[in-house]
Structures are given as C-alpha cells and as structure tokens.
Length: 193
Image (cartoon, rainbow, N blue to C red; front, side, top):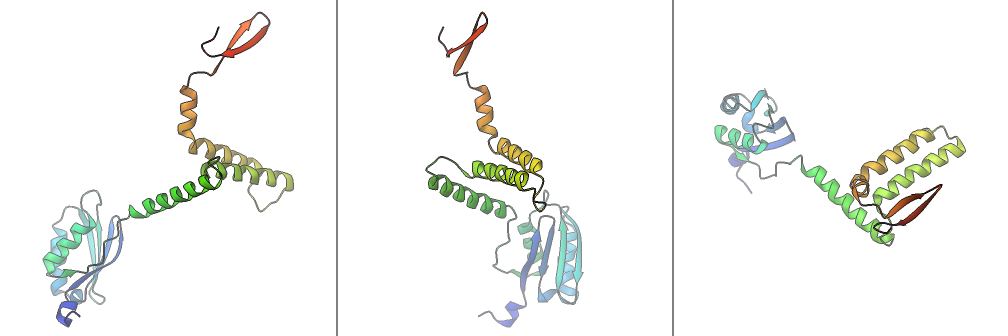
C-alpha cells in the first residue's frame, strides 16, 4: 500500500476525448502545485486553454490533438508538478472503432460459416431491409419507414457494402459476346466466333 504522502502525489486521468483532457489530483486543491502545472501547459503550443477547479483539484485541458498527444500532456503536468501519473491507461479513442470492427468481422465470419459460405452479413442486412420494405408495402404498417425508403436503403446499403465486387464485375471481361446476325441476336462464349 502506498504511503499517504505518495497517494496525495498521484495524477489521475478522469476523462479523455480528443481535444479535451480532464485530470485530477488532491495536490491541485488550492493553488501552489496547480500553478506550476498550469504554467507549463500555457507554454505548450498544442494547448489551447485550461480550467482549474481548486475545490475538486480538477484541471480541464483543451488541446489540439494534431499538435500534442494526451500522454504528452499527462507527462508534462506530472513533471511540472512533481506528481506520479496513476498507472491507469490513457484511453485511445481509436480503440473503440477497432474493437467494433473486429467484433463485426468475427460475427460476419460466424454468419458466413453458419450459412455454408453462401451469404455474409452484408447480404443479410440488405436482404433484411428489403424484406422490411416488402412487409411495409404489403401491410401498410405506419410504425415502419415507408416501403420505398426501405427499398432505397436496401439498394444503397447493398451497393455500398459490395462496392469492390461491383467495380470488379464492371471491369471484368464479358463472359458472353453478343453477335447481331441480321434481325436476330445470338450469344456465344467470349472469344468464340
């Protein structure tokens, strides 16, 4: 267990969102230690502003995420005020989308395997919305969006989620070639005559 003196010298990250960092330390209650940290922050060109609450010991730091990182701000404040940064990890805001994407990929792999590799979530989602469009059209349910909106969303979602496949199909050589012979049209395999 840390001695009480060391406990009072800890710097805690309370909240972080790119551009805003809220930190707290019991050492910031009052002015002395906080002034050293605020002066150091004011000299950093990536810091846009600070707000100090001497009652709670909290400091809000507004910064430019493209100029300075949250870890660097914590290190600067800790060094200027002779505090120890709490070992809690600084959350990386880019982790959340990565976790969601990884979970969606895992679910997609599961669905694809479950359907015998016939369909994936992209297809199921588009077909599901198209099914809702049909249901809305047939029943006239007012709680659902209008059927034509659902149909458009299904088409739009399908084309966006399958953009690579659609582009590849557009650029692929034709599999059949049409010959016009007088008044009739005949299809022959590509490359044939």
